[in-house]
Length: 312
Image (cartoon, rainbow, N blue to C red; front, side, top):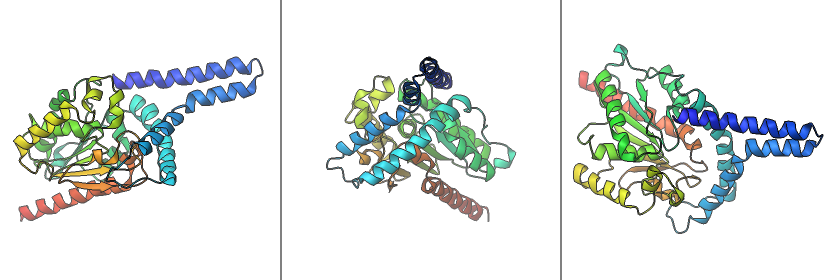
């Protein structure tokens, strides 16, 4: 569903930009033709700029470092370059171009489950999947649907993927989740996935304590991400009941003080987790930072050494 929606949005914007340009070009009003077409195609950059201003304004007394103007500008530019690759190409047109990697050769290797976030699909992970495949690492990337439904509804899809990887490899998988996907994983692990062993959970820009922007959310899952909301409180309570007093010891949380979607920045951290700050990165661009993928590889290497040691 999301792929078709983003296909329509991308092609619609391109058609509108072309029509605008043609209308004014035929009247030899070249300035209006070029300016209007560029505004239609690149207008998203203005919205990203507004989000950067809002996150700086809302930082307040948050314990995370305050971003400098130069860092915010660098993060904005990184997101301007990354967003169209994700939302106008990989997700709408290439979400099924790369298949999961599971097979007889997966046995004995720790696999990876990739969980995307809000208004995304598995196409987000295409660069990851190419690299994981190159390294021979088993992996499954899922689609969370319904796109605008309850976060609780995603648990069966996560459960199926975790079981699929665990069955193929014979080992607990490592779960990597971006944005809302981190909340979906937490909900699954506190509910129907309680007791399921995992090698690690690594979240990237996940609104663990909600996000200021969610106050404008009109969808079910958008409202669930509001700061101080009932759903987040109930999730934390369920985690303490099912996973004890230190429910986040198996989490690594990547966050940034330039995240234009999840802010204030510390809302992307968890108490007792290994919280890693990546400076100068916006929300989607954070997924593709070398530090994040390197940490995944580090945990996979540790799991491989542990497996080899156990086999002796």
